[in-house]
Image (cartoon, one colour):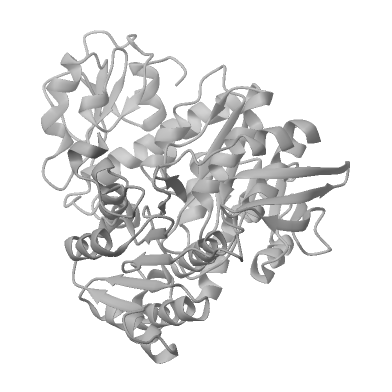
Length: 506
């Protein structure tokens, strides 16, 4: 963050100073909502949590080096205090445990502070790039960081910091050296993306797709499209809207923006498009990148054909920011998955491959992951590998949940996944397993297990060298422990296909 005095911050956010001996003291470090991460010169955000209120950690944050605390009440140490605002939409979305509106007040102040900092930096040349879509935001954010880094210092969120907390928190990581600020914009209802865009106004906006993620909150894809399009509407006249030509609902957003539109995709009308797409043995795509300034061969390091669209969006943004084609191709070739549990592909010495894509799940991302799984398993037609799909429940689908899970079970059968392991005891899990059975699964091709431990026991007993295992579910399920267990050394097989003991594997 740029250095600001406590008095300046209080004026920006409309707060008063309490227990501040020197209003000219400056915040020169980072803004943190976790007191364990506060460092010298920092600013601590007192937010309510599931087990403890951040106000209770104010003194510890000051002891750790924070200059002050951004709080909703005096805390006995230097504080910038805002008035609680009561229950709000922001509170409902980002802070489930905010019972008195204190968290909403702190978040509103945080947004004002981020806006002030971004405005100052933008006046000095900072380019803000916003990314939204039902799926692929985090992967595209990582690719954007890779292609823009050769052009100057980049700030991007770690993982999926994309709501009312993570969005301004990331924006405040930018300083006078930052040339590009990349931000994810998520939503669980209309108006959320518009609000985030006001916190850090983007000059370039990327809309990836309109799917069914969080459809339980939105009600329909049309409402999702209306909400995702808020990013296009937020762009200035001298900005750029990068829209997916392959998704009609996204392409239609061209009429909702005053910015210049760049279409990307495999559609012939896309100005930045991919031709001759092909996948290697690990489902990494290669293609010809076709642009208004020429064509170039691209080989991606990330896994899954769905990454082609993400890469095209990143390439289009890089072109707008001044990158040349060799720079873009080289950056994409060397860009690995930077965020945890996102199509993280690892192969054990014994040949078993684990695709850990367990950070999140929605119908679109599960379909893409299943296609990547079977592509990897059948890369060599003469020696196909067994494919395992270990799938947990997809959250926030509302009334569509049972239907969506049923469709995933049926798709697994249509793709001829060798073994489907459905994890969970709820109606959605039963619907996925039943969908597979009704689509034609026979014997134990589809198995329903009650929990993670049962899934691990089944896999440890039955997977073998050369198999490919996909692990996919919503984050709340915690299914990544299955991938971690399979990748532990004691699970390796010897040359005869027998499990090694822990001692033999070390």
